[in-house]
Image (spheres, rainbow, N blue to C red):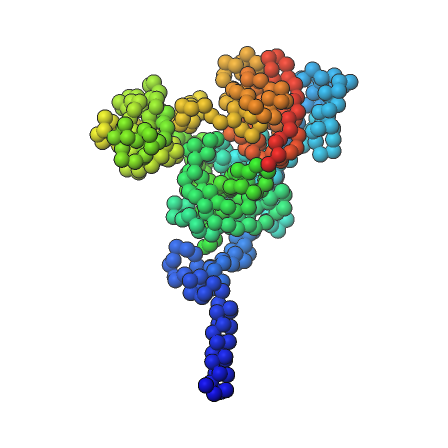
Length: 492
C-alpha cells in the first residue's frame, strides 16, 4: 500500500474518533426527544437537562418564609411552671441549652423557623407546608427582589402538611401547575427553596418512586425523589422539565438530618384539592371507610386463593363504620376501590381519603375465594380515629431513631395531666437514647429542643431532622411534674 493510501486511512480514522469524542455518549441515544415527548423538551444533546431557563423564569415565584413564635415564659414564669428555682443546676443547664445566645428567651422574645413556599396566584396566595407555619404568631414572606410581606394564614391541614397563606400584594409572578399523576419514575425534577436559610437555591434529581405511604401521613401518596432537600426546603416547589409544579417538598428521610437520604414531595393534585377545601370552607374533609388493613404476603396469598400477593387484607372492621354498615368483614381482601386497583394495603388510604364524603362507591373484594362487589357510602374521617385508621397494620409500630414509640395523647389523659394541647404520649421505650436518657412509657413529650411538639406527625419530622451525634433536650411531663431530659442522637 502506498504512502498516500496510509495517510488517507489515518485521516479517516482521526475524523471518526473526533466525531465520536465530540458527540457525548454516542450521539442520538441521548439527543433531545421529539416534540410532544413526555420526557421533557429542555434536555440537551449532552443527555443532561439545562435548568437555567426554568430557574430564571420561575425562581421569582419561590419565596422564603420565616415564622415567629412568641415565647410566653420569662425566667420567673419558667421557674413557676416547671418548678426549677434559679439556683438549681438543672435550671442553669437548660438556660444554657436553649437559644442561639445561650440563655432561655425572656418574655416577648421571638423564635424563628425558616421554610419555603411558592406563589399560587398573582393576588398573593402562597402555598407552603403546615409545619412551616404551625404555632406562628407572625409569618414573614420574603420575595426574590427582597420585598417582605406579613402574611395571614387562610387555612392549614396537618394530615396533608399543606398550608395556604395570603399576602397583600398584586401582580405577583405565579407558578404554573402541572399534573402529578402524569409524572413518571425516572423523570428529571428541580427543587427551588431556602435550605438552611440560603434563599433561592436550586437542586435537581429524578423521581425515584411514586405513591409512597409514610407512617405519619397515610393519606398522602408521596412522590419520592433523590433531589437534595435540606431543612428550609420544606414547602418549596418541585418542578418538572416544563417548569410546571408537580409537588410540594415536605419531608426527608435521613440518618444525618441532611439531604443524604430520600426526599418526599406532596403531589400537587393532592395539594390543590386541600387548598380548594381550605378556601371554600376553612377545613379539609376526607372519606372514611372504617377498616384496618394489612398487606397480603406470599404466605397469605395461597390460603386466600390468590395466585400472587395483591390487595389489602381486612384485619378488622370498626364498629358503626361505613364498612360495617355495608357488610365488609375481617378476611375480605379489597382488590379495587371505586374502579381503581389496590395492589398493596398502602394504596387504599389515599384512595379513600380523596373520595368525597357521603359518596357511594363500589368496593371489589375477594371473599371465600370468589370476587364480589359491595357498595359502600363513605362517611367523614373523624379526628379521633386518624391514628387507628391510618396505621393499617395490627403489628406494633417500629421505634424511631431515639428508641421511642409514640402516639397521640388521649383526651381523658389530657384532662388528668392538665395539658390543653400538643404533646405526644410515649407508648413504648426500646433500647436506645431515650432509654439511656431516662424516659419511660406513659411520659408525655411536650418539647424537643426549643420547639413545642404539636402532635405525632410533627414529632416524627422533628426526630428525623435531628443532627446525628448531637445532644438534644426534651421537655417531659411525668405525673404532675415537668422535667427536661438530655438525649444524645445516635451517630449515622
